[in-house]
Length: 232
Image (tube, rainbow, N blue to C red):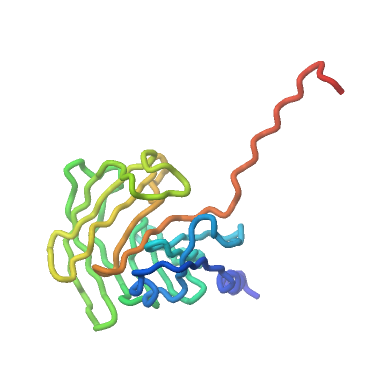
């Protein structure tokens, strides 16, 4: 079997965590594989695969990285759920989905500066979305991106909120379909900077959190050196 087929076979065995949380009908209807649970309910994940933890209102699923697409504006990571949904992230931003309601079949972004060069006053940029159902192609949005203080209402696995740089994105051209504000937590110490957590919306009522999820246990602390002259 080819390496690609082996990887997809492994992805098909992804375990999902679920629980019973009310008020998430749109979430359940849009993402069939998503089920609830807390960090204590994390399933046994394969350590040789990369995962993305996707959540909403206490409901989570762990998506496996299928492959990475080359792109002039930056690589696109393609994540798969065990139920077949697909989410594409480019630089931490959603740029495509499949199997959700609604689906962002394609996203076109204006060129953006490095996260380290976002001015304190913020900046505006444009986004164009092809959305299904309804054949809503070429939906244009104007977004405002600005740095914000670290929030206290998030729960991160890999870092404390104050250790990262935070940005908020709001839709300027308000309408009935305007999306709620979204947030990005970025590690500016990495080169290039990496989004380690985000909250993004596909519709006014459908928002997700995204967090890369490590499967490897932290390295064990080195053993203390033997004390010269100690007891044998």
